[in-house]
Image (cartoon, rainbow, N blue to C red; front, side):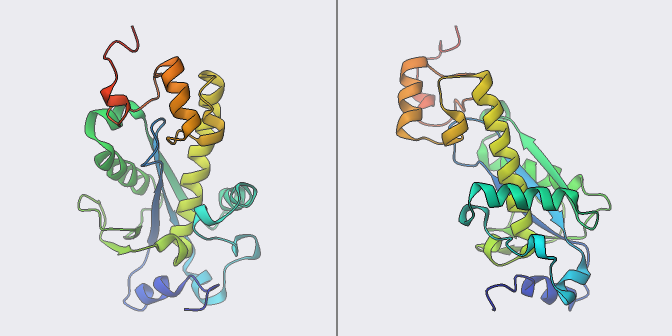
Amino acid sequence: MVLSDRFVIEREHYAQDLRGLAGVDEAGRGPLAGPVVAAAVVLPEAWAREGIPEPLRRLNDSKQLSESVREELYEAIQVSDAIVSAVSVVEASVIDEINILQATHRAMNEALAGLEPPAEHALVDGRPVPSLILPQTAVVKGDAKSFSIAAASILAKVTRDRIMVQYDEKFPGYGFAGHKGYGTKAHLLAIEELGACPIHRMSFAPLKDNQPDLFD
């Protein structure tokens, strides 16, 4: 595969008469705080033949891009009239209630259900999702192989990062704007000093081992 050609997977599906392909990805499975976010993106089929427009050629696994590039790509996706997309946010309280795997799958299904017009087939980053509402193709490291999945990766990551920056203002002292809720040393120290706050995932270690009266 040519490194810059991340439409190979899409073209393979189009050759099988599959249409309405939605890339699906999530952000925030691992953090100790904040929501898990999923996005679904349908790119125009014509782009797979003619090439992706210049503003979006840097689409890649969001973890491989700088924050500034992610923000630029996010805006380019959002302003494009040719792209269909949807995002779903599942909060920490729900993650604690149904577990992170089920919460992630719920977010993916909600994002897919939000597409208008609806997609017909999903390209999923990573492993298959048994409960997915659409027929699917799971692609290992798909956010680095498929423009559709990469676009979903960007939307999910930037949406979640912005949410965590807002939470940093609401719950100061934890450093959410920096670590985005991940279990960094600074975050763990803040929890030790301040206790948990309402957006912490109490079902995650080490929080689940804390005393039950954290919010009293």
